[in-house]
Every structure is written in C-alpha cells, then in structure tokens.
Image 1 (cartoon, rainbow, N blue to C red):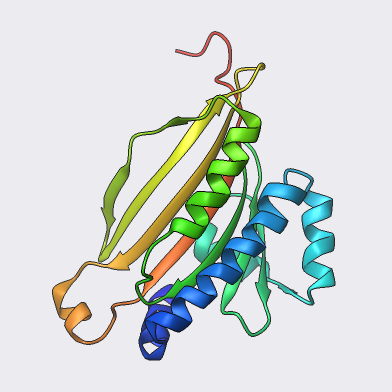
Image 2 (cartoon, rainbow, N blue to C red; image 1 turned 30 degrees about the vertical axis):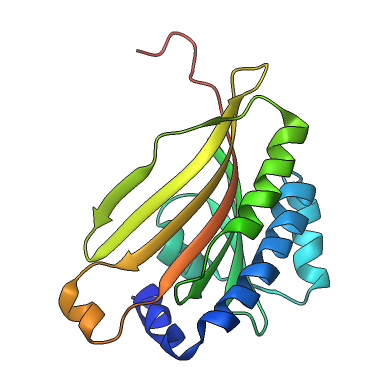
Length: 189
C-alpha cells in the first residue's frame, strides 16, 4: 500500500527532474552497491554518514515480506537503500519516478563494472504481474569460482491496471540491484 501511495506522489515531477534524479541514484548505486557492498558494515557506515534513517522492521516487512533485510531512507530523495541477506545477498537502490528518457547512464556504469570483473552474460528478462503491478527486470550474471553467482539487475515496477493508470498512478519504482547468490546445495534435487 505504501508503494502505491508513493507511485502517485511522483506524477508532478517533470521528465528532466526524473533524469537528474536518475543521475544521482546511479551515483549512489555505484558508491554503495558497487564499491562498499558486499561489506554490510561499509554500507551501514555510508548510510550513517549521509544521515539516512534506518527503516523499522515493520517498514522493511512492507517491501521485503519475510526476507531478511535492512533498509534506509535517504533524506530529501524519496530513495531507499537496501541490503538483503543470504541466500540472496543483495544491495539495491530504489526510488519512485515518472518515466525517464533512458538508462544509458546506468548502462555505462554497469558496463564498466562488468568489464573490469569479466565473465558477465545477459540473463533472461523477467516479466510478471503481481496483482495490479507489472514487474520487469533485466540484467547480467557471472558464475564465481565457488559456483555462487554475481548479478547486476535493473527492475522497474508500475501499475498495470488501466483504471488506476487513468486515475494518475503512472509512476515507476526503479531499482538497481547488485546481488550475490549462494551456490546450490550439493546433492540437492
């Protein structure tokens, strides 16, 4: 429900402002999720240094349900930073936005990171509906020496219900994710 209310709040933000916010969120993602993460303590220190408010367990549950996680809300940005704990150890930056003109600034960052690390391959796109929300995700993944995987993902969510869209719920929740997944248990069927 909170997410639905936030989607409606962004209708008054112009596309130019959305693109400026995209630049800021991409820089935040690089600082927190590509440079500090997977060191959770380094992420926490960055959030404290930026004066971010840690979300309560009830607020975390709204987004993560039963998945173990921590989240912070950055003052004045309507953005959140998340750490999800294993088996999917992930760092993400999420924010609400009207449509942006493109993701080239993110793509440039991801390409530089992936090129420096090596071994990333595209993964199949995700498209699914969860109630009135359509979720779309794309990304790349590489397999590490211990058979765990590292992925960079871009996920967008938006209201798909035509009545709700006509009423003005046209914003997008955009999420950049850096994820490490544990290898499958040996002997698992």
